[in-house]
Image (cartoon, rainbow, N blue to C red; front, side, top):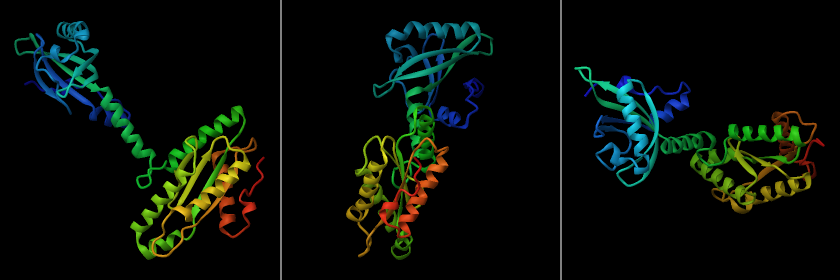
Length: 293
């Protein structure tokens, strides 16, 4: 078998693309008559013949690409589906390159492919790992701030609407100290579930710190944001079980988005300030600390 490494199609220079292409890469050594001499990849084709593994409707494209690769000596790109050993039809982007024998004639074609469905699946999984908090499954702060940036950008063009809520658990550190971090993790998971149960599908919920959560209400006016803030605050002691005989409570503040707001950082600072005012014992009517509109 000839050295195949020099026939592998180059991966993208972007690190993520390199990882995705490697995870979804396939390689086939195809005889010029269509026989399948060798296969490498995460799955195997159903048939031992190159053409038998490809749907009949794609045979013309498969034969034409194989013939061009064998005769021209240049890489030939082609989109061909392959049926796997379990019967699934996988769309694959192939690059085919001829391999010359010692006598100079072409006997095989190396086909390197990227399984597009597998690549998309791996990419979705990787992005989920980056965008989702590993403990609660909520959006991470980074992903949440990206959503806030889009919301603010849209507001600058069409008018600011909605509100940003920040929620912080009270005295959460003592739970970890007295009952251990596993108990603290269970509380955080319970809080995430309780908050999610109080929000609409259009609202965005994130874990933005150790025991701090953020909520984007994309269309809410201040009175509605106040009601939602109160509902979230009430949900924590009502639905989250505390270790031992303790009680879990939270402080909640919000900032409405207005045309005077210039950045996501300003929104987060305003919501934070409102939340800390509540935590400091101020009356609930100052939950919205800054009159931004």
